[in-house]
Amino acid sequence: MLDTKTLAVAGGKGGDGSAHLHREAFRPHGGPDGGDGGDGGDVIVVARASLRTLAHLTRIMRIVADDGEDGRRNEMTGKSADDRLVEVPVGTVVWDVTDGGRKQLLADLVADGSAMVAARGGKGGLGNVHFATPTNQTPMLAESAERGEERTLLLEVKLLADVAIVGAPNAGKSTLLAAVTRAQPKIADYPFTTLEPNLGVAQRHNRAIVLLDVPGLIEGAHVGKGLGLEFLRHVERVRAIVHLIDGLEEDLGAAYQRIEHELGEYPGGLVEKPRVVAVNKMDIPEARERFKAQQAALKRCSKTEPLAISAATHEGLDALLDAIAALVPVEQPAPQPVLTTPTDETARPEPRRRPRVEITRDKDVFVVHCKPAERLTGVANLNLWQARMQLHRELDRLGVLRALKSAGVERGDTVRIGPIELEWS
Ligand SMILES: Nc1nc2c(ncn2[C@@H]2O[C@H](COP(=O)(O)OP(=O)(O)OP(=O)(O)O)[C@@H](O)[C@H]2O)c(=O)[nH]1
Ligand SMILES: [Mg+2]
Image (cartoon, rainbow, N blue to C red; front, side):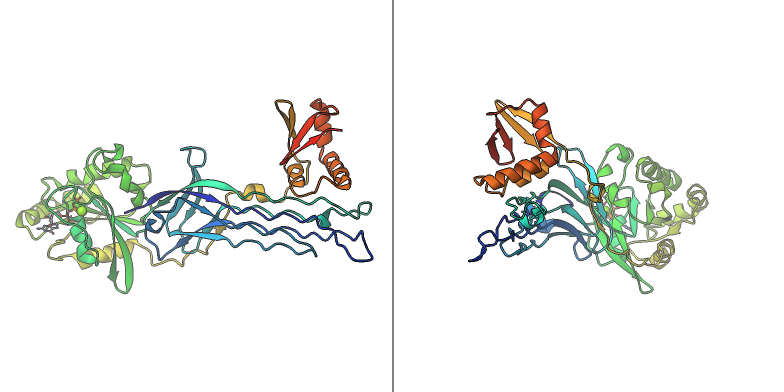
């Protein structure tokens, strides 16, 4: 059962804005008509009820959305790229692990169709039409595109079952799953037969109940003994627990308490879940005798009415399913798909304020760090003096000139802004 996967994702780059100037035979200096660049596609992770595992992503290391198209003349906006969907099973938790092992929760996709934007595409750049002002009718600046976001994701599937069957190794958990569902888990007369969780769907009075058979628990499981923690996280999400006791145990109450202790030590709140206690292997006479003798004691210590069953002969299984069904509320309507975005906080419109400007030195070169200024130098043809003049005005407006002055720039120095280097004059 493949249920975790590391995946690099990147939104597409936006398209550049166009700095095109309209030209007609008798209007040599036509107005600006450069269109905006299209937006790059997003990478969106979406949960699908039809999927159970991440096996379809096995060979995929990186998913990149397409780039937006550049803006063109005649105010033609470049085409925005389609989003790329990464389909995962319902119950997938999406983590951001971009900065080495530190895990940051991005989303918990618990409903069919719920989705999250894992990497936004870059915005397209604005065309020069947006830079026209009453005093500047031939704007030669346009914005270059934004790059898409990049992230490394860790996808983790938590199986979604209604009920987990837990108990000591060899209690008959897998036999029970096979008896009430069509699942065919491995069954054998030795402990730790089940190494990975098995799912099955039981039908009872027109209801479907999803059961999860997990590896056997032993003392110390909560600190990692046996197959311990690895699979208990699947149990975190179930709505109820069937605690199955091996009828051949000497002391049923003690056996019950050993397992409950392990569940209690596990941090996922497992002990608070409603449960059914069932004692298995009633087809064996010693087991039946013991159950009769210890039923009252087990009832007292478990505070529930223990059921006597035989997974082998199917004795008591209908009653068991009824007890389970009573603990699992009838299907709630699936929650509405929600689109969550990790960067919603930053995407909220905020009061316009001056962009951050920072000047650093790379040997003799002064390097300007100011996103909007860097984007302005990507597209414009700075061989034209008008374009240089306009850039100068924008840099003034953005506060870049002042920052450069405080950094000590002098005539003749080299200044790098985005992809270009200018001689300061
Ligand atoms: N007589 C009898 N034997 C049973 C019954 N249920 C299970 N067994 C036997 O008990 C042994 C263990 O059964 P499993 O279903 O593999 O037990 P498990 O709890 O899944 O064990 P692990 O996966 O190792 O934790 C097998 O030999 C089964 O045939 C039962 O009701 N009666
Ligand atoms: Mg088993």
